[in-house]
Amino acid sequence: MASCAGLALCGQALVVRGGPRFLAASTASSDDDVPFTYDCSTAEKSQENKGEDGQPVEKGSDTILASAFSKSGSYFALTDDSKRLILFRTKPWQCLSVRTVVRRCTALTFTASEEKLLVADKSGDVYSFSVSDPQGCGKLELGHLSMLLDVAVSPDDRYVLTADRDEKIRVSWAAAPHSIESFCLGHTEFVSRILVVPDRPELLLSSSGDCTLRLWEYRSGRELYCCHLTSLREPAEPWGDKRSAASRIAYWGQESCVALLCDCIPVVYIFQLDACRQQLAYRQQLAFQHRVWDVAFEEGQGLWVLQDCREAPLVLCRPVDGRWQAVPENAALKKVTAHLQGNWAMLEGVAGVDVGFSGLYKATFDNVTAYLRKKEERLQKRRQNPPPGPNGQAKKMKPEEASLRCSS
Image 1 (cartoon, rainbow, N blue to C red):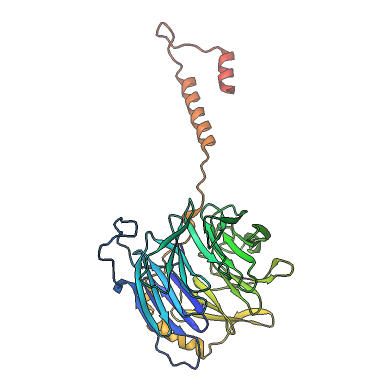
Image 2: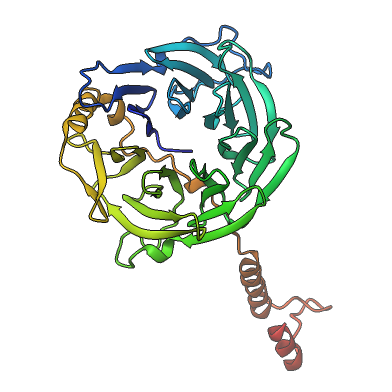
């Protein structure tokens, strides 16, 4: 349920995706590298055109739905709209396998050991795929009763955390996923994103369609802190009263910073995690002139921002005297920007496309008001055209009956 355009970073490896294509480049200014590009529309398709459940696979648009690096950056994986899971080696870049998944996926992640890939889908299931055996079939690990929107793994690979449309975050044992350690309950709308804090592995960040960012001690399911994003907005802002869910939570261990990007809002909220006091401190918001597709931190560099602007598709922000701001164009930014401008066609096709979370909000129906309105209409008609009496004449209503019916 993320944007058709996305950004992923691991070490100095940067990937930008748009539609069915992605581009991989290095952020090292000294590297005169040639970017690696891949087009999912050219990937092999299943000969039998069937999924693992034996049912025919619907033809998709090949648009990339989700992607992720492994912890070391040695592997990169993506899933697309044609129900394929594609695994790459990154040093050097090479496609290792193209496998079929049962249903379209919403999120994926590698285990910390990089032995497995966990893929969450729209039906609420999580499948695991082997990394060492690139052709191996998927194995069903766990399931929810509603659509999954994100999946994460604890740094020690002991727990699998899943977020669904029905407001729940579930913490399951990785070795026995049917065993549930806890639930993190408190959101009042779908949970859009979750992130286990890398240097504080007992803490979890989550965001939701209820416009909140929450901090949890996930093993016990205890909520530690909740920030209502609507309280951070100015009334004069055009999106001040707009409902929005976070499409990305990013964490920077260097200064314990959290960046939050909301769906279809050109603002990035910056928080600082105070692990000792177990709370988040709001620092500032970065506003942009163009639609922001995605954000990601790079240790030692700062916050990379991918936006809908051909002249400046990437913006690099760093803290200067305690305030985050865009830095002047350096060698690394200039090099990656040139690569993107040369391959702008992959992003041009997704400009203006809205595939956010708007369709996931609860629908509310006021049946009582409609019932009372229709009842009043019926009573009005009866007053104007009273029913006929026993002799075919219109029955006259007594004043007390009329007042009684009017008051009913």
